[in-house]
Length: 123
Image (cartoon, rainbow, N blue to C red):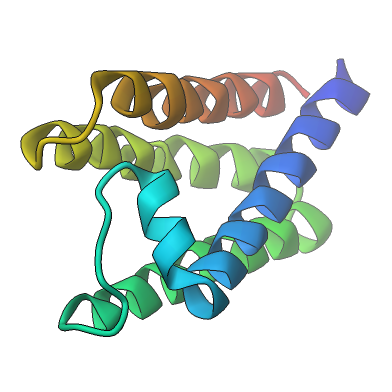
């Protein structure tokens, strides 16, 4: 169980780093994949960059907690971070995005993050 808990946590944190990179350096495709397309050349460009910094920071903080503070600290972090994809689910739905994206990507991510938190609490 320990290997599974740590592996899932590391993968989720690395995925956050990837998302952060993508929103910073490929904002148009990243926004489309998010479920609510945006024009990175228009006013949305700053917000896409903010999302990139946010997601990348979550990934770095998660990895640092796992490496230096341990599984319990990472579990609490994951528990609180699960609010982000839950909020993203609502944002996509509220802005006319596809339900398949809202639930298949964002809600599924929230569930995965909560599973990761539960596994880390058990370590």
